[in-house]
Each structure stands twice: as structure tokens, then as C-alpha cells.
Length: 489
Image 1 (cartoon, one colour):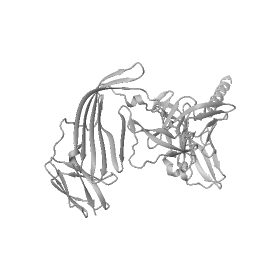
Image 2 (cartoon, one colour; image 1 turned 60 degrees about the horizontal axis):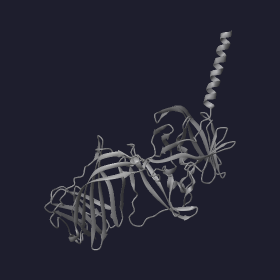
Image 3 (cartoon, helix red, strand yellow; image 1 turned 45 degrees about the horizontal axis):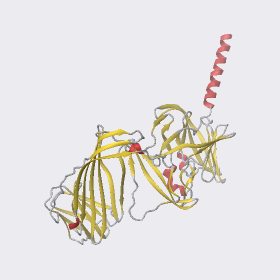
Image 4 (cartoon, one colour; image 1 turned 30 degrees about the horizontal axis):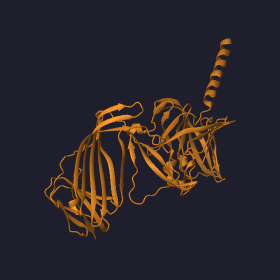
């Protein structure tokens, strides 16, 4: 009898403990550390709690990011992508707030199969949440209990509405918060925000600062982290169309790092061998053409940059009239890049994404590979790209060959006729080795045609090109061997 009673008591106790374990509240966001998320396009966003207000409920205030607040306006101080604040209620409900002030309830105590009202919008749209799964999940090398919550969007009569949210989920880890999150500031996404649908999509946890695991913020010192033996091969191109010709500049640079020293003041000292050639070509004024070659041993010091080191999306104030934010991206190969977005002040509550007339570049910085790298094409074109690197035993790309003597080519190396043309061109290449690559650009500097020239004479159709003036250049590898223009009638 005693044995039966003991067994029954232990069985009830174990069931009670299991229920208590399952019912113990999870938490979507934690007040310490930084969590990193990546969307389907590799764009990284972060959660970091800037301040906490402790009352009956705990109120967390995440750091603000540049937010789209109306059709033409952004704000650097309005809210985070998860909203302006998060209210942690004692009953386990975590409350978020969208840009209209609507409350969004994530019920962390809900069990598998439980449903509840997440939000209701003006008695016209209702969003229900339901716990789809409660599983042990592996992520970022960790193992934890994770709740998966799905959504159903209906009208006031209960009819299902066509919202992308119906196919999205959030996931909450018992220990680490969101494993999969949504942009609650835009929740549940209105018609205008459909233009920015990828920004609303699911964001997957890709890094934690506590414990430090997975993706971390890209810093200035990581960008310029080189070791002895590293090589960077960089090509630069600038061009400008003017009447009656064109100007082109070709620059090739090789950095070979031969010394590295850590400095006591937090910087890093590098000595490197720099090999460079610069070629300038003027199609209408060949007497201005020039070539320069240099081989030097140089030194440089790098120090941390507090502005660059800010988290992705965190506003960087330049002056009272402009804000910048660094966007961070991670590729499938786990390489990190950062680039700069610009905003100008229209009023105290409205900032505009700056539109540029002419050619403007978005500078890109890469982990351990320097920067900035960029490309832009308009009435003039500019490009700076990494074409080869060697880091340790890893190599990528095609190395540059830089000669100390300028290449010599006969005049009229390439001839294109008839000019003007109705749609057919004959390309005649004189006295150079093959293959030659022909590149054709429009007046905006955009490449509209490329063609490998394997013979002295090549027949080429340009019937698909719109009527107008086009500029061409012929290249052997990275070297330009001929330039000119033709008219398509």
C-alpha cells in the first residue's frame, strides 16, 4: 500500500513539474547584450535595450533605428524596428507597439495549440496568434526549448484576409529570446508598406553578444585587419563623356603587407609594398594621354572609428542637417560588409532619404579586405573594386599584372563602321593579340553590350539598341587598346 501511494505521489509530482516547466514564461527580449538578425536578403538588424523602466511591469526601450514613418519621411529617433518600447507584463504577455500605437501581444505562456488575439485594428482587422510547436531546437550551436507562433489575419466577420503575415512565424527561445522575429513597428503591414515588404519579412537570429556566438558587428579594425603576407589587388576606373570626346582613367594597385605591429594606444601599424599604375586616355585629345608607374614602401596606422563601429541601422549624426546610418549585410559565405545610407533634414520630425543627381557611390567595406569599394554609372562612371586577394592560404579572384612601361599600341587600334549605323557594325581590330573584349556604353555610362572579338573582323548586330550615341572601348584583360563612339540611327 505504501509503495502504491509513493508511486502515485511521484507520478503526480512529475506531471505537475512537467506542466510547471512547460508553463514557465519565456521572454522575447532581454535587457542585456545585443542580438543580431538577418533577413532573406542578408540585411542585418539588431536589438539592444538602451534603457529599462521598472514598475509593476518592466518596460524596455530599444535603441532607435532610422524608421520610415510616412510616405516621404524617415525619423532617426522614433522607434526601433521592434517598436518604440516593449512592455513585459507579469502574466507573461510581452507587448509591442506598431507605428500607429496599436498594441501587439505575444503570449509567452501559451502552450501548443493555444490561441489568442494578438492585435485588432480599428475593428476591421484582427490578428490571432497560435502556438504551433514547442520543441527542442538547435541554433547557433546552442540547444534550447523553442516556441513557434503562427498568425491568422481576418476581418471583423472572421474571413481570412490576404496578408503575408498568414505565412510568417516568430520563434522564442526559453533562454535567449527571439530566434525568429518580425518588424513589429510595421506590424501587421499596411498597403503602403507592401512596397517595402522585404523589410517586414521574417528575421532569423544569427548572432548573440551574451554569450558571444555567431555574427557580431563589423568594426573598423576588422575591416583593416591584415597580416604579414596578405595581398590586395584593386582596380579603379573613372570616365567622363564630354563633347567632342571622352576621358578615361585606369588605375591598378597592389598592396603587399610586409610588417604589422600592435600599438599601445589601440591602433595597428602596417608597412606595405605598393605597386601602382595610372593610365589616362583622351579620345579627342590623344596628346594629353599619360601613364605613370610607381613602386614604394609605405606605412599606415589604423585606429578604431566609433562612428563606423555603431550597430547596423543606428543613426550617426553628421551635423544638424544630416544623418547617416551604416547598413550591414552578411552573405551566404559569412563575409560581412557595411555600407552607408544618407538622410537629410526636412523638418524636426521628417528626414528624407537623399536623392543624388549625377553619379553617387555607396561605399562598401569588407571584413579583412578593406574598402571603400563602389560602382556608379551616370553621365560619368566610377568604380573601385577588389579583383584579387591573398589572406593566409586563401586566395580569390584574378591577380593584376602591373608593368612599369606603358603599353604601346598603334593608332586606330580598333575601327568601327559604318558610322552612323542602321543596326549592323563591322569591328576591325589591328595589330593586337586576341582575344579582345568590346564594351559598349550608353550616354548614362551603362554597359549595354559586351562582345568577345576573336578575329580581325567581327560582324555585330546593334539593332536591339535604341537610337542614339554610344561609346565603346576595346580591352585586352584590364588594358584598354581602343576607344571611340558610334551613332545608332
